[in-house]
Length: 267
Image (cartoon, rainbow, N blue to C red; front, side):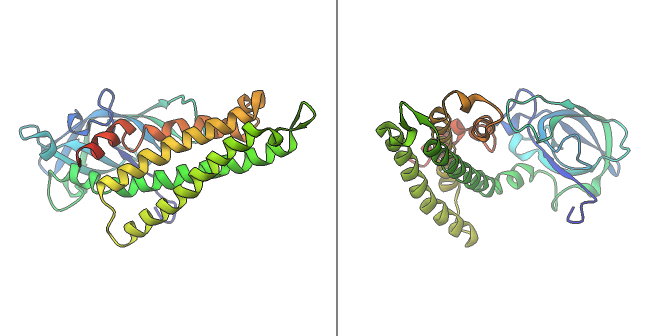
């Protein structure tokens, strides 16, 4: 992967399950020295390009769902029964390859099991979620800061009614609110990063970060697009692409509704 010989993807989400990982239906049935995999996954980033997939599948359907999931490494080159669907058409993030993948009696060596034994898949996935949610938070803040910088430059140059848009009090106050949120967010993010470096980032803090930063990103970016007026709706302007790309931030990595649940469970 470091050399670029392999492109990787992680395959968790299935049609109809979304954030409900224990309800996945993809199975990996033991058969001698192999697993026989059947099922499908959706919204897979790098899906059509990947030749190495970290797959979440049920290796035991007789136990509780959270105990029967395992992670299996699948090398897809010339693999019988493995199929990639057409790229999914998204409203944003057009440069990112996202698709469905299908497994029909795909045989993979048991040696490709990730970890020392079966049944640890859900734990393996969830123990990395705080890191993923912190990465999403960092992206959200950086995106919002970029939108604010672009918009500040735009309203200085754009004139209306004989003055720059920045000269209107509404514009200055809206941008002041955005800048205040970004400044506070930067302090919180730095604290979260330090916690992560020292191994002290917990599920609740990561959930708060993901929830607050992605909600704030959307509010800031939407405000910035509004200040661009009609040009903000044109894809030739960066703010329009930022706006469409930002919408998914509140969905992947665990929906923000799930973040509310995680936070509420600590009350």
